[in-house]
Structure formats: structure tokens, C-alpha cells
Length: 294
Image (cartoon, rainbow, N blue to C red):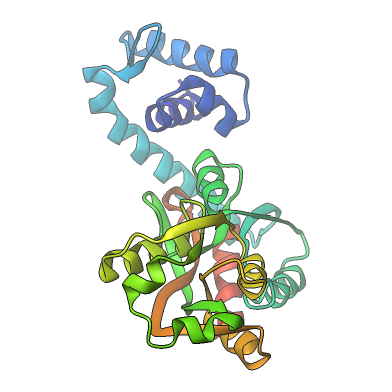
């Protein structure tokens, strides 16, 4: 029995699939299956009940899973503490970044701080939509993510960097149409929807629920600059960051519709199992410096 078998057992149990676990662990499916088979032989018991269509923990597997998770936590803590004591912050740190204005997220300052303080640490940034960031974090394809949302997802820790305000905006040419318009009137006009899951989708859903409306959604877009451009072009009503809305309104490109301010957060998220990891700790320290967080 070794730590790789324990890690494979926990990963398969969490993802419910040998194929997904193999991808997350960066091993082949036969290798993952072989590690579980060897572990079951060492323990003289079955950990998973297999059928042609499903994979589930046996009663023994359910009882042993929490202990296996604690073993991994202790092992990770031991390894991470040893790295700290040796002054070692090296390797690779893969950070996912939401599709938001990089300057607004202070990514340049963050990267400069990291490469200056930790020259032996290789940094890798990947920009993508929220759905990919969440899946990649779960599968271990990235180590952390700068994420837009109200809370960290399950099994993840989060460092809140700042609060973000969003405003509803409409084409500037609609000013007369929207003057004195009710929510019901606005619901009859075209709206720009966003993909799910996303912070904007979450906020729009709240707006629709509170106003008791079901708007006509004509276009789906998942980037704030694209949404702003579509609104300015006269496509429909959308939700964008407040600073962008104010800037575009001042330029006469669009108009802010209603006084409603939707709130969300910019958060750095990382797996709970990575708490204490020197590379994650380094990223957290750099982000706190960049954002002035004590």
C-alpha cells in the first residue's frame, strides 16, 4: 500500500469515475484501475461495487473514505511544511483567470510580484469562462483561479479580493422608450443573456426573480466587453460592470437603465486540500499585497 493508491481511491470516490479520476491524476485509466485493484488486494476487501453502467462505494469503502482523506491531508501538510522549512517555493503554479478585464483584476501587478519574489516558480495563466474554471479546478488541471462569484464553490477555499458592482444598461437610442418604463415594459424588449454558470447569469436571475419578470432573451454572450458592444449596437438590454457602464454612458454609447446595483465578488479560489501548500500560500501572499488585504 502506498500514497498513490490512497490518492487514487479518494479521487475515484469523489469523481465517481475511473476515467475522470485518471484524467485528474494525469495517469492512464488502466494505471488507475490497477492501483485500486492492488489496494483492494492489500486490504482483502472491495472498495467499489462495479456494474456495466455505474461505480459506487461499498459499505467498507464509505467507512474508509474519511480516513483516506485524512491521510492525504496529513501527507500534504508534511510535504508542504518540509518545503517551507527548506525555503523551497518552486515548480509550476497554474492559475485560471475569469474572462474579465485583466487590468481590473490587477493580473499584471500580481504576476510581477510573483516572478520577482519566486523566480524558481513557473507561472501559467489560462483565461476561460467560469464553467471551465470550476471543472478544471475540480479535475486538478489548474491549481487556483481568479473567479467572479459571490462565494467559493464546494470543496474550495476563497480569498475575497474586492466587491464588484454591476448595472443594467440599454442602447442610448432607447432613452425615450425606457423613460418611465416599468419592469414589465422592459421585459418585452430584447435582452442579452449569459451562459450558465456565471456571475452575471446569477445576478440576472436574481433581478428577474425580484422584478417577477421573464424577459425576451435574444443573444447569449459571456464577456463584459462583448455585452457592452452589443448593447451599444442596439441589440438589447444587458448587465455589465458599473465602471464600464458609467464610462460608456458618459461617452454616449449606452444608457444605464434603473438604479438597481447587482453585487458580486472577485475571489481567488483553490482546493481545500491545497491549504498550506507553499505555492498557493505564495499566490495568496502576493494577492494580498497587490489588493492591500491584511
